[in-house]
Image 1 (cartoon, rainbow, N blue to C red):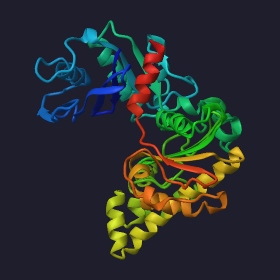
Image 2 (tube, rainbow, N blue to C red; image 1 turned 90 degrees about the horizontal axis):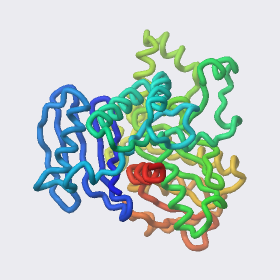
Image 3 (cartoon, rainbow, N blue to C red; image 1 turned 120 degrees about the vertical axis):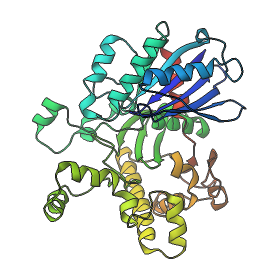
Image 4 (cartoon, helix red, strand yellow; image 1 turned 120 degrees about the horizontal axis):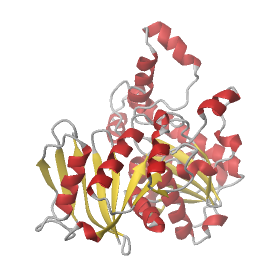
Length: 396
């Protein structure tokens, strides 16, 4: 079966067409500037990447252009829509309503809409993509795969905040976690590589990108993760602050005359390693280069990031009373060997020994700990699209 994977944003749409038997990516691409002027980047497997400007007033036109590209007589990879057996949609927030992926029905769409307050920038866009696909592909089954679903196995002690209970009772204010498809995919792959049953392994997954989170996976279940009600909690990230003393907000608001919107912009878009580096960059390649030249702020940003990662790893070792595998993934986790080394330096008490030569490899699946290391440390490239395709196939 060929599965079309859709990841819909407010003005963009990423897609991949995946053969579920071979798990080969047949084609992939990106629609950008939807509602503005529109452009489509399309690349069939083994072919050249082609970018074209196309008017995309809505997501429906964007989906139509994706279908046209996939079925094009010259560069397409299928002859007709009949060769697309299902569509898997990434949905950011499922709240407490969804603990697993589901076939999309009108009731499911209504439940997703009810979670809009929890992800106002993402869920409405996800629904737009679902509706557009249903309009153009009415006979094709569709599945919603939720970022938050994997973390619905967290116990109350992990997901409850120290706030008045009424806010949970009335508004479901609690920790939900994100990057669930990535944490699920990487933790399962770690068990395969370790040669141990998934339900008998304690794994810590470090998803380190511009958005970053850590997850403790005990016996195949997420028991804790660093992001919370929103993706702002947890690690210091590219432009997000991560954990801070809440009283800082009142202090800065009074000093800078900021309202709630101004504070949230500061926390989400002006903080993290970008803010720490004195607005130098949120890109770790830029920070590395600047630090190598003696830029003090860049050095601080890198040190703070790695220290926070190591602290979370240590806390999750305590939460699970041990760890078998630590896996690094996502853009920074897969490529920044210096970040991995800095993090592992804090974990000597676990008996970890790093193979520095292996740690120098970028973007490849590899074990970077030595054979005599008491905890296995791996780099596992994430593949959220493949995870979504697998979830989709399992339901249709």
